[in-house]
Image (cartoon, rainbow, N blue to C red; front, side, top):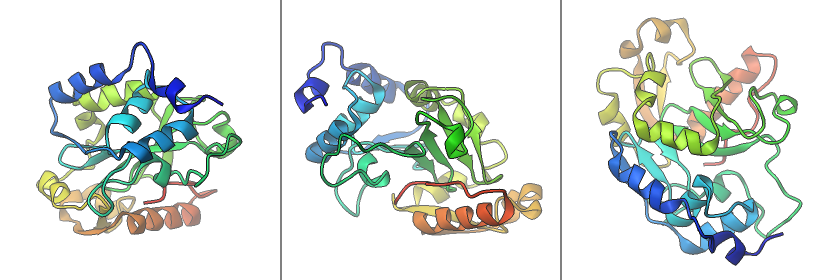
Length: 241
């Protein structure tokens, strides 16, 4: 197992290029301040280096809010109550470094305000009920209650988010005024929609739904419960928030 200095002291860290991308992004971006100790703890458990976008985000940010908080990318965590949880907290990293531990179904690296979940596939995605290849991104869609393969790695996913292409991705899931509703949320909140996003009523008239701010854990729990009731299996781990 590599020590923290081996992971942080690299010749070509990803952060300078990533920082430039964050600054130049055509979508609103807010980089949250990092908790240095928590970031290093996460990096050590992950065993990825600062050359990767994943390592750079964990070491240098407390997470990133895009499109006024519509999309949340997890990093090293920040001030309790006023920031996003760390990648380690979301994925229930062990309290004490454990070289044998790994995320069983994949690593949750982001969420959106509707309870959509972005996860990085582990070594055996099919065994975990996930589509795509090992090391690829997948998305739990709140309007279908199913995982979808994204055919991108983590760095490609970050670049995709920062390019503004997610606007097309969210066609059919945004209504007039969505940005203002997302901006009003605390980092621990999501948007509860009724009739539910997967219902015929919501598919026919999303703007006509009733929406309210709710704890993200509630939004995720409702989606997971219905996915288990309506499908052959539940979605598995969606992150602890």
